[in-house]
Image (cartoon, rainbow, N blue to C red; front, top):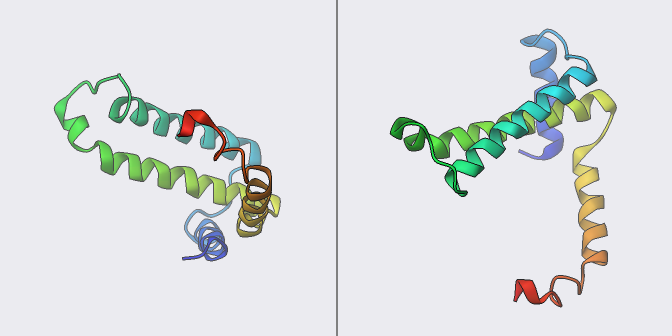
Length: 112
């Protein structure tokens, strides 16, 4: 699925099953909440924090995938609400980074 298709699919879901979009401010708060849930899992899967139970650890990778999906869903909602074409935006950012960072990372001794 392309990013544009994802935006349309989310818009269709919101306008049929979801009834309507939350306000942009509410969706921004929800996005921060979802990003926090990704951060919590990353700290436990890849960082030094541990899970409270082995059951939580056992489902961690699936939970991480779902939380990342939640982040993407809300970001797509915000893009739809604000008229942002995320596909075009990503292309612009990739072009900018390619020009700006052409030699930067290759010359970074920390990445060697």
